[in-house]
Length: 176
Image (tube, rainbow, N blue to C red; front, side, top):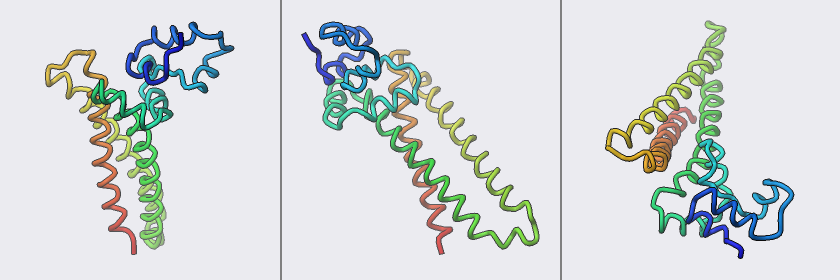
């Protein structure tokens, strides 16, 4: 008996992935299983790897998962894409700021280096704040540990979208 990728997403447990892999012809390794679409993203412990796993799932599979398990799949897929957008916007912001304020380095040679450092420091501090705030939020609302992970990721996705909007605003102010 073969369990579909959609069923794995809906079940969301390591047992389902194990069952699906062993109920068919044996595979050489986990990479082959992943390539065949038999990933159990819920069994992935590392958040960044879980986001990448969900990013590989089709929109139809994500929609089906969300239908039965709200906020259990979409936030991870969204975070994967938004994290890349955030990185690209930070790079664009710094490039525009460097171009806009290049003349400041005539009087202050360390200006552009300080600009880069402080921009990167601000990004790291914002990420630390976002992650801490979103980790605390479900617990402050009395959620169980089983619910907290998905709600934390939904919070991270929401705050990341807001940060993307902030960076877009900063970028629009720097464009000539």
